[in-house]
Image (cartoon, rainbow, N blue to C red; front, side):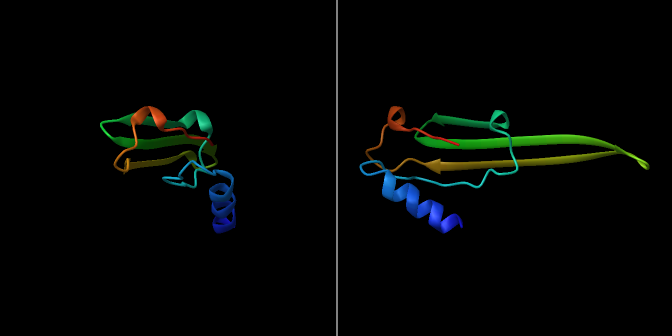
Length: 83
């Protein structure tokens, strides 16, 4: 479950603090962009797919954008992320 994974990540990160955990299962890592700027972490992802069916073309589009403000005392170069 998501809570168990979160607990494992928190327990394994010892002196690191987990700022956010996002479910990105519907996105390929190449579709995800993470930027750290102006005291914020911005995560954005975009997915497009096109299918040809008997009725014609069908399109599926998903996107997500989330901004998280860094806590006081945390510098932008300390931010790491993994997928």
